[in-house]
Length: 363
Image (tube, rainbow, N blue to C red; front, top):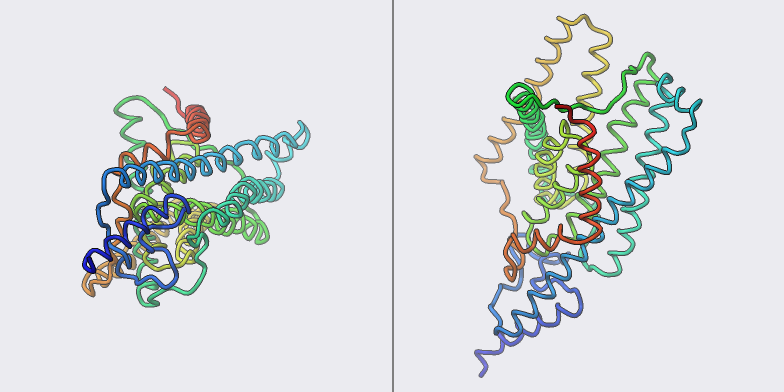
């Protein structure tokens, strides 16, 4: 009888988690060991296991609904902000760099910040996991090395996206267009405004939203599952096929780096560096002759690539790459994915974003 006690305690813990939304394996508590969950998975009897599956589907579906509502909130708030632009103001928006980037900065803060901050407050009451891990990294050396390595993956994602665009354009006659502005910064204050709009705001607000609110709440069901779901939402929110593949690949790299370092600052820094690279190239393109710019751009990309490759090799040689937790095994990955995406708010959000994406595709 004494030998059965650990199994009974484990089953009791699994059943209690169905009613309390408590992570059954303790993997997201602050005192949990880094290498694995303090409680292993022990198959429960059929009835308890069936109820556990039902509860986990319900919880994942609820988190999918919250994420879908956040995306819909992003769309609705953006729509109402856009309505503030009357004809005269819109013409100024198209012609005045400072006004355009200042307006876009406010737009990004409100459209991303309001729905996801609201979700953060809601989920803090419902989910005991840490939504915004903003502490120090677990291993400072690993933190320093993983940032260039993940940044390299973001750059490779950009090249992969370019290859996809070229394939569709030359092979199928489908052209992917990128929404954007033809205005360029002409003064130092405008360059600083551009950095604030393109590098600082997305790095903070998008990382808090995607790698914080969305990804952290899903980690109890598997770290890779959480990374892929957050990367998918991150990609869809970009709303055009020029950025969607890149955002998905970058989301995977950043998500892995955030989870393995244990701090959201990793994602914020990588996101900032990646977007700042684009700003530097834009400014250089405006002030340099074309041939000089081409050489400068190649040297810049190669330098970042070599640095990332060296850091990746060091991580591999020192066997510092972290294994991710598999999470709950009650559901298959397909069942988890279906529960996350197949709900009304998320389906509405996907439908709208697909419609928006089609506006930037020409045949």
